[in-house]
Length: 468
Image (tube, rainbow, N blue to C red; front, side):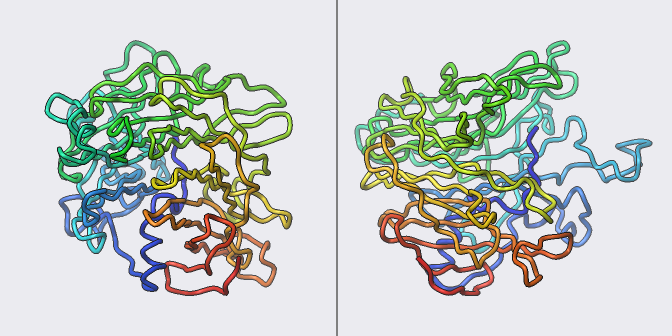
């Protein structure tokens, strides 16, 4: 399973950072409150790995912004490291994921993020006696709720959320111990639904199945929540399908599937890219799926060809039934992995957003700039993804080595961009090393559609000089 040890995925917090900047004030709130669900004392007693979370995701109710749902890879039910009654006689540094224990954490807020409740792990998995074990890589999105039969016909006819909202939680899963079909060990993608803002969830539904050693990974989920769309309510999942043996993967195409009945059933996966890997052309990872005001579906991912790494997009105008061939947005140089001095993996995976008024499509990613440091760039398409503008640098060099960006578009058309940056404490901004670097989170906005960007804000209410 993919367990990127990122301190924070800025994409998950872009909306919150936007609020920080616009209000010119900030506050830190612990979402996993308490650290172990149902144990008020755990904030003081929880020890690694039960106090470990990463890869957060967040979604805001589109009809009432007071309600938010967050998720993360969360190890609050993992047994203590080292020898003990659960792990048995193991080395003291054994903190491995324990068989049958899930990692999909759920946290909810009903007051706009001012306070949070730790709901524990996503239900319906092996922790509750289910046949699947949740494996993290969470992604959450809100959409309209279908009627009791699973139909969106009434919502589409009214062009409104007439049945309320439904939240979808997508994640990786594997067969729980004792439930494996023979010697097979595939990684699956499941989707759970909630109609009460994350308080309770349906049992997981398999959106991407597998057999043998097919490894579905790095998924994204999105719901068409624009009432003007002819596919209002349709839910999409995109991912990378690693194909191969138990130890070597020889191909990794980008796949997509959708559900038109509220997540109860899913279409047969549609392959959007080539699958081959060789010595000169790498693979395809980090997909993101988004929809536009007319229902156009755009799936973005990082690809490569003989010229090197590139960001691409495939577009569908029929609700995900068929897609265009991949369209190149731009070639670029990947950031370092890891950044020197960092203890977590980094990448140049794309973030994307669509203006639900104008239909303008935006893509953002981290690339290695001329100085060798990481920078965040943004590209724009005004023709549904057919052509793209020259990527513009949105991050500020003084912030440090930029990475892990998140992008969104406000109803007003304002672009909100959040990212992290690692900066050395020494005079030389590239002199990273153990104990010699700090990581801050930053927010910038653009009211010009991307050519210019505001000054940067940090989560600590510090301001940097204006740029753009």
